[in-house]
Length: 126
Ligand code: HEM
Image 1 (tube, rainbow, N blue to C red):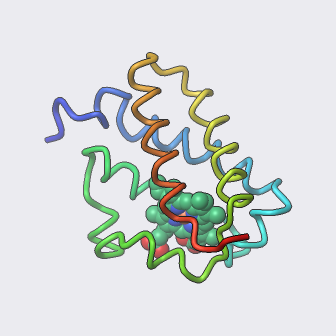
Image 2: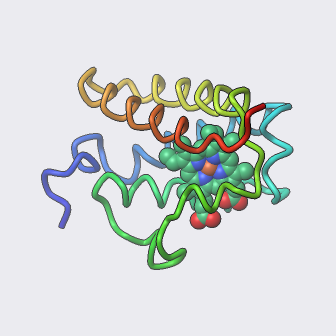
Image 3: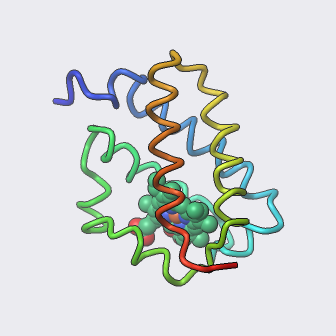
């Protein structure tokens, strides 16, 4: 069980489903980000990001059962991520986080993590 986890506090699977779905609605319309995603359909990318976030915040570990260790920096190497891509990613994620209308403390915790993680995945000077 995942009692007491952040995952549970924010509303479990359903909350992460809404978050990541809303995020990819933004990515789908983004001329800078959309070309980075190799698959024509964003459904697989949506499953992977949601699974990762669910696991990270204390929910079921389905992501690693299917994908192994996250190794996020390594998995992002094929994609050129400069400041512009990072900021575009964060903009869509910000919209998606806002849409959840979480209590401020939980929202801040989630957002601070996403900002940190996005900064850590920049792999190109431009
Ligand atoms: C995968 C872009 C930040 C988590 C991907 C993919 C792209 C991408 C193009 C491949 C899509 C796919 O799975 O088919 C970006 C860009 C970012 C960014 C431009 C801007 C900084 C992040 C952050 C996280 C994250 C901050 C975590 C908090 C993931 C995960 C996958 C993924 C879990 C799937 C890895 C796998 O299992 O293969 N990302 N990403 N990404 N990204 Fe990001």
